Amino acid sequence: MTRDTQREPLHFAALRHDADELMWARRGRVELGTGAGRPSLHAGHLAWIPAGTVHAATVSAGGDLVCALLDPVLRPAGDRWREPRVLGADPLAGELLLWLHTDRPAADRVAGRTLLGRLLLVAEERGCALQLPLDRRARTVADAIRRNPADRRSVEEWAAHVRTSPRTLNRIFASETGLSLGRWRTRARVDHAVDLLAAGRSVDAVAAGVGYATTSAFIEVFHGIRGETPAVYRRRVGGNRR
Image 1 (cartoon, rainbow, N blue to C red):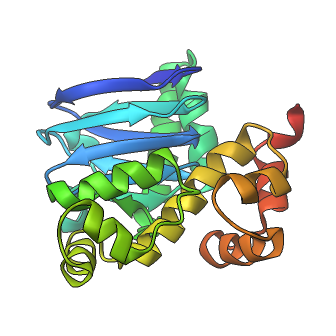
Image 2: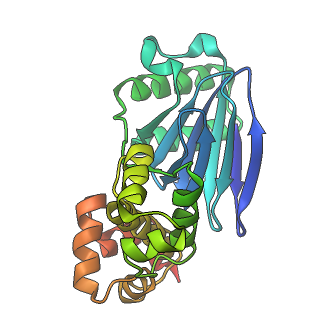
């Protein structure tokens, strides 16, 4: 078990383990790179990484990442666990990971691992984890949007910036991320907003900071993607602590 709480971004270079790995983004965002894609996980996501999978990870500033290395013989049954997965983290699963991170009697650790395995069996896959494109042109656009989510350049302007056509740029985003550029930017804005809210920024300030002209428009989009309002999320993750 490891836990990394970061004030500044932290990058883990590509590596592989002989053990299965379970990553929990307790707070902030984790960008994960595997052969299956490059999902950007946010608070409440679990990443399942089977033994032997080459992977890299970057934890955002203010992030809190908890990892467990598990003997493959303890792996839940089924083909589902042979490939990397992004899962929703049941609150109890997160608490169990924190509990297992501390010294516990051997019998208690076995009981905790058993319950964690049962929770994994019923965990829902989260396709909402934002995928990062691999194509150089699309990645240039994606990186620019993530650096400044308030950038309001149109698809046409982005396409001109990377010397391609709007149709080609949208096609690349759709094939490599499952989303058009416009929808990908919306998701990227919400992911960035999650970090700002967790850091204690007000809803109005976050709305402006990620490019929305009105707070009401931001609230509607955030709720549609996250299933809760920005204010509720901020309270839930402790963003009102400052």
